[in-house]
Amino acid sequence: MKIKIIIMTGAQTRYFLWQDAVQENARPGFLTSLIKLNMNNKFQTIAVGMSGGVDSTVAAYLLKEEGHKVIGITMKIWDNSFAVNGPLRSGCYGPGEEKDIEEAQKAAKRLGIPYYVVGLEEEYKNSVLTYFREEYLCGKTPNPCAICNQKIKFGLLLDKAQQSGIKFDSFATGHYVRAEFDSTSSRYLLKKGLDQKKDQSYFLYRLNQGQLKKVCFPLGKYSKQEIKDLAEKIGFKDFVEKPESQDFFEGSDYSVFFKDQQILPGDIVDLSGKVVGRHEGLIHYTIGQRKGLNLGGLKEPVYVIRIDSCHNQIVVGLKENLLSDSLLVNELNWISIPEITSKIKAYAKIRSQHIEQPCTIIPFNSNRVKVEFDQPQMSITPGQSIVFYDGDSVMGGGIIDKAGIE
Image (cartoon, rainbow, N blue to C red; front, side):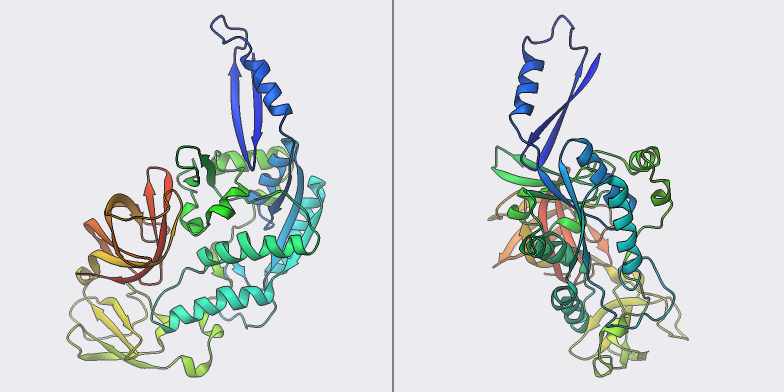
């Protein structure tokens, strides 16, 4: 005999599988106490951020099945302010948003839940696009998804929804991560999803304690394949077959976000300062880039080693010049710990697909740390996020300021 017991504690759901409830060594009263505890916790009204994809749709389904009142909400951020040039990609920002909203509305109707669209066009431009432009103009390669999650999806979306009269107790998304409360440290933790291939904790490291307190992630304990299988089972096979959003922008040309006078051509130089070519504007380049440099007559392949915004130069070198064993981090956000006051060991990822590497985190000055890796890392990129881990728990993270700190 197997009975699934669901216990609601705040925004988090804890599962207990009582196997063979009548076995001789079962503790008397255990099952009864679990049921009583569950009955004493009322179900919540949970707003689910719906994208029109399979993950958020199944997240809403799971919460509804648990007995919660579920509301679907989608943020509207595209307002046709920019042209979409070049081949279209699957992205979060672009004209395809209209179709995504239609799909989310269709999913909500099939699930039998209320659905609302929250307009955040100006807020998105002021927060995410302004940050995106400023970072590129400083010669950095930004991570707009992390900023959007912090400021828009888990911030202004919820504020504006409640201000408009949409009432809910907590917020859920279809991210493959877990959130838990640690009674020992009295802190809310962000943990990797159990499906390591789909873990999205890297993009959520900027969430603060107040945000983590009010969120739940129903998919964190599932694999992607399990979610696909469940979606087919409950009648959402058409959602399983949809392509997923993989990029920030649907277009392939970021220059539409900049004024012409902000994109100035300049010199490409080698590490000695010798001019070896011309570039078309700093925004078109990133650290480690090899293709598109249009440099001929060189004996060996060269890569972008540094972007010098002060002199409007792209600095190139050999692949070995991309290696560095240290970096400086600013704009820190700590999750599992309040701060660091002395050097500590951790594992770190310097981009989403990077395999986390052992390192030492050293306090540097106000809200900055120095990171020393045990082994040199390739293509450390200013503007990208670095996320620190202790096992499967996110310690925190920040934005890479520069590589190769002595």
